[in-house]
Amino acid sequence: MYLEIITPDKKVFEGEVISAQFPGINGGFEVLNNHAPLISALANGPVRVTPPAGAQLVFQIDGGVVEVLDNKIIVLAEAVIA
Image (tube, rainbow, N blue to C red; front, top):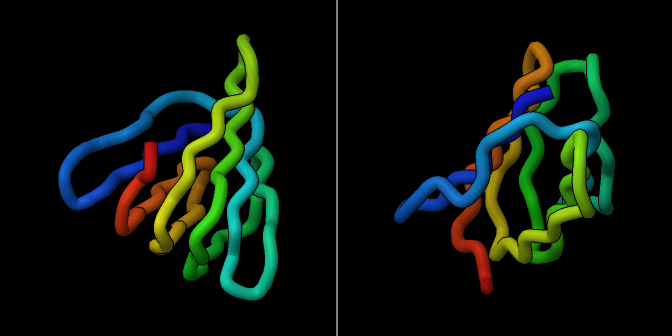
């Protein structure tokens, strides 16, 4: 599954992932391979990404929107807080 995390200023992350967890406005949710199509608003909170090799990555976002379609995830975040 391919993931992109984008802010108005830059592309924060792009690459293959096994899973991604998001802070939805109505509660957290996880996206795995072959997930059904989805568009959701995101709250402030952590996006947890598990790449094929290596440790889990965490990006603290300041709200945004996520789209899941055909094993591609695009996150349009207001900001990513370092």
